[in-house]
Amino acid sequence: MQARTLITAALASCLWSASAVADAGNADYTAMSPEELANYLIFEAKGFKLDMKTQEGGTVRDRLNQDELQAACSAVGGKISDEARAKANELGRSNIEYPEGGIKLGDWEKGNELARSGYGFRVGHKTDDHSKRKPGGNCYACHQLDPDEIAYGTLGPSLKGYGKMRGTGEAMLKYTYDVIYNPHAYFPCTHMPRFGANGFLTKEQISDILAYLLDPESPVNK
Image 1: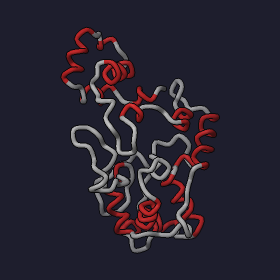
Image 2: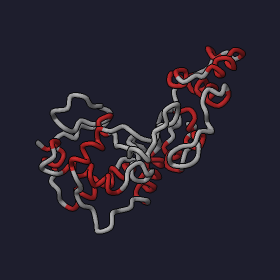
Image 3: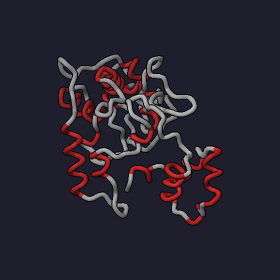
Image 4: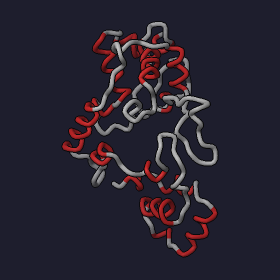
């Protein structure tokens, strides 16, 4: 699957510009598949500003190009091969970097803020300004964490009581850090973002999220 097909037609149609609507007048988009329509709206009808600068450097168009790991995980006929998973696993383990002095729990209160914040890396009419506010982890979009929080996603497993059930031993610290830094190291071709490997979160921020998950004082473990 090409990177450009990962944006659904529904999303693309929501972001149509006036010029895209005009350009689409000569196209029979009702005959297109969702992938073909998404490709057309984004790359041909000029419905997106692909030359916009992104926070990590480069442009929006650059974001649509798959890296090696994404290419390995692209499904053919809806099924990801064992070979692709093995490649993703290898790539996931190859680039994990650890903090100087080893992995330690940070500040769980800061981790709480990061887990709830979805700020960062958005571009468009109101581009996120990282000089004014740091990106968050948006963990609640996919996971349950604080048992008293009623708003959370279910794409990922519940992490309620994570540290209470698992403890804070060295092996658990490393495992949890690795999964946040690059989850493909354990779950090849997962949908979870590569927070550390892609520079979405710093090592210090990952340590704070570790504390939110593992510290006995964190509400996650109450």
